Length: 312
Image 1 (spheres, rainbow, N blue to C red):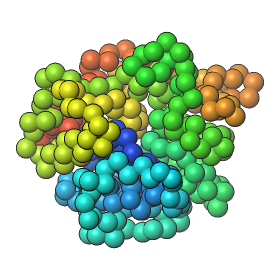
Image 2 (image 1 turned 120 degrees about the vertical axis):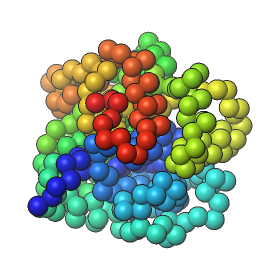
Image 3 (image 1 turned 30 degrees about the vertical axis):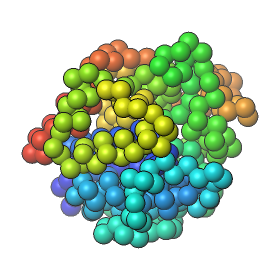
Image 4 (image 1 turned 45 degrees about the vertical axis):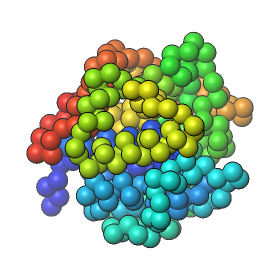
């Protein structure tokens, strides 16, 4: 009998390009109500991405979490934005369980009868998930799907117009296939909500000054990411899009959600389509944005013995 009451999570991520995936992984590891089973990397050089995730997992002391690489495609140019932080570390160096056959491992976990109410949190483009559904369509009804996708009415930093959002635009057909799958439930945060998340001022300083090894690794990688992009640290985080998807895996607090029929057009735009769209819960607005920013900071900085999440 499983006495662990934490919600089991599979994280699907393109960690290693934008830094927000690294913040989201740290958030997942610090969430007392979530139990990460697997981190599956996707898009481009998935072995590089697995190395980034593996180094963070190892520095957090969380090597019980499995690590897996999805379809390996080597983009030109390579978006290895954290290569300087990664150094010589490789996915094969991860002391926990690592497999380069990530799609097969995802299917095995999803079909495992001993796992109940597993949530798949997706924070990257979807080629490997689409391939998993082609190989084994029965995984969808066994999983709750939570993702960071789309732009309905607004975009980055609240700009009042939608865009073809990156996670959708980079693999449009795959996103169409994944949205059409019969998931147990589906919830997304588009740029309307997740595109407004930054930590600054006292909240950001709490992260920077923390002595927690995970947060020190996170800030070191953030500074390497800034240097790669020839940017300067300015006392705040970049936009932390993906953290909202982690939050939605266990709580709707701070957000306004609507049930909408969503479709992905062939040009990469995500739209409400009452005739052809797929019903899902969509986080369309914030009820308390400052509250979420504080709860995210409190969660990342929490002491390990605390059993309650400040974001619940």
